[in-house]
Image 1 (tube, helix red, strand yellow):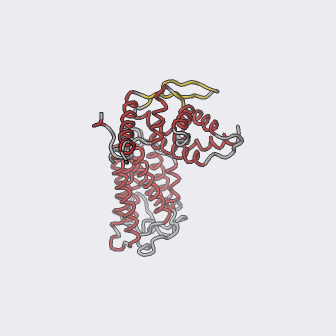
Image 2 (image 1 turned 90 degrees about the horizontal axis):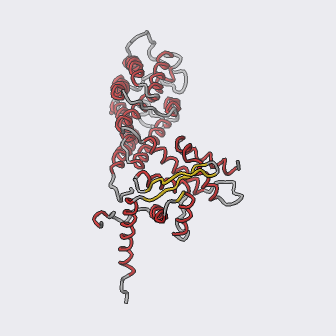
Image 3 (image 1 turned 135 degrees about the vertical axis):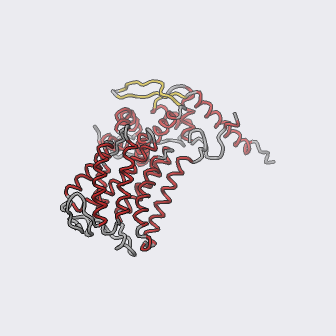
Length: 111
Length: 292
């Protein structure tokens, strides 16, 4: 798995990372994704609506997420997105990479 | 409908029509839910997000189908705009040829390549003949003086080779595009008066021998830069091909005046070449991660 890990420091962007993480617990619509992303990041990551849907379209194009179903609410269509197996693999690889990078600092013995 | 909703609906026009029809309501719901109570003006970050997201969605919508054929169509559309704009100020003296050239441009924009081909060939032949000081099809009083937009006689600063090259490239490309109907936005027609207008002088040295109006310079630089950005966003080479074809015709024009080109001419050519090369390289840049 490590040989397929992304290289460099500019990896999966932070909003993308939180969007994929938000979908780990099941399909969500745009409004719920926005709320979960804000909660998970303690309010630090709050993408604009245009940015959020740009991320969702891009992840969808790459097969990382799928439209699970569409519901009509107040006469308007609302899409629920779910993460794919490929999306979970990418997210896990990114989490491991960050964990390894963080451990270099966190586990250092300063004494 | 509240003022805020009306304003957000207006901003959503940045997105392609098909996307708006399918998902505009979904975005609007979220935008209105996220807005604070009593708010009338969209938040600045939402405005930036919608404009940026809308333009990117448009780029992705345009980056469909064969990129080489579409890039070729894009390039010849731009060249035909320049060809037609060159004739436009002479509407009073050459009404038939201006109309034929406009019809050719319209046919290209609508993707009617076979219809456009004979129109491009006859207009190109006539324009080249005028640039060479020869008579063709009908008696034309040369030099041809303008009615509006410029003060110079037709092709007084452009040689027959450059005029012929512009039309020949378009004519040679049209049969290649047969079969698949490529269409372009009608906004290309809106560029005609801007390209035709002699505009403010920018080239101070050698400008009388090979004039390039500020409006044409800015328009070409802006469109080629926009194409480079589109290539970057979509990782698609069609915009680079379109820019390269335009640059080829501009280079032929400039080559005819090689001895008289000023630093400003060369700086401008260098800038367009740099952005075109960048737009050709950007779609093939290294992928930093699987989602890049």
